[in-house]
Image (cartoon, rainbow, N blue to C red; front, side):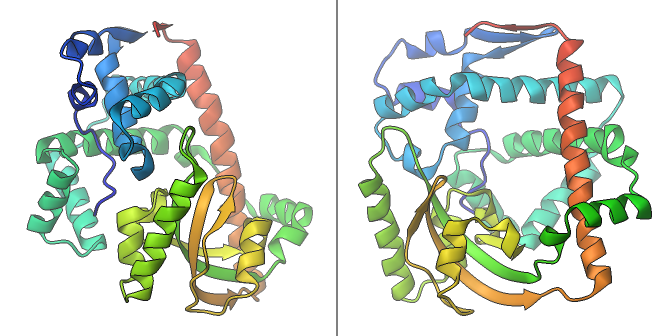
Length: 317
């Protein structure tokens, strides 16, 4: 499981730069969130952990230049996470050791990993088992908080679905669906497209030699689907942009595409299957899910805004 994007070590980033005094600067405060601080080391550790494989492969000075360009965005995300953890603590939301272990067991089961393989994957990512548990615990806590504050308060009735179906009939009646897996190599500032295309060529070569698409996706893909072998699930035709549709139109189940560019990066996709949704009940269930996601996104953004408005936040970048 090569894409466990978790805290590696922030010190490593500047040690690699060759600057013996860098660690002194690394821990200055870059933001204050109520009574807590976010340090430079936390910010750069997060950027290093979330960096794509392409960026991680760059020289240290190039990598740091790209990180500097994205400091503000990552810091805003860290502030939002800190606010949510504080809110959860205020509301007494906790995660027991049993819950945490159940979550870990679920992850190992999902990816068919033994305990030794799981721990070896963590080791390859440069993280201890205890550090991983801390990160996972925080994710579960935020999930619980969001369920209480937002998801549990969303109520959708038949009238809401009727209205949504009426207003989105063209979208819902698009019955073609595709089960797709992908390997994505993201576009990166200061990284030539030719280098990304060269890596895609190496991946295609491995596919031609018989390596499985899912294994290569786990190893190389820079998309969140990588942990699941690149599986994007079933997507409706209306959910795919023109670039994907143009490629898929010439494929049959089992085919793997040639690399193609979109605004997100360079894609290699595998068409796993095609299906159709025919029944009215299935269409209404799809409408319910789409409406629920739309309402959740709006309410979540409003809630985060309210957390920020009633908090003390000072950015010191």
